[in-house]
Amino acid sequence: MRELSIERMEMVIGSGPNWNCVGAVGGALLLFSWSLSVPLTGGVTLGLAAQGAGITAGTIALAGKCMG
Image (cartoon, rainbow, N blue to C red; front, side, top):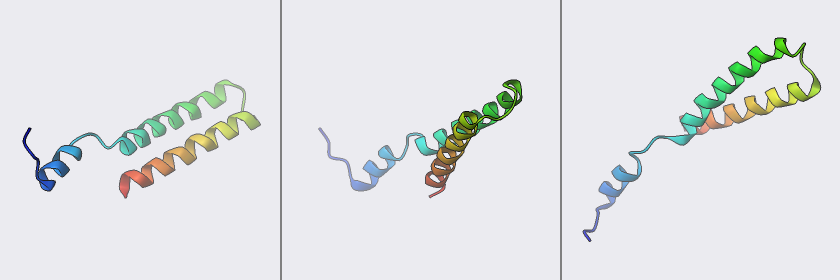
């Protein structure tokens, strides 16, 4: 088996998708669909508000990791 140089290993490891960015986009889509569903349920309850806050916090965290 050939040895890979450090530069080549970095290229191979870094060539995949950035899962933090994928998660941030997914979170944004989830938050958008959540915001559309709220009027259909008759308004925001405490449970729905907590769910929306959780989705928002997770999306912000993933977006921060994606940018950094």
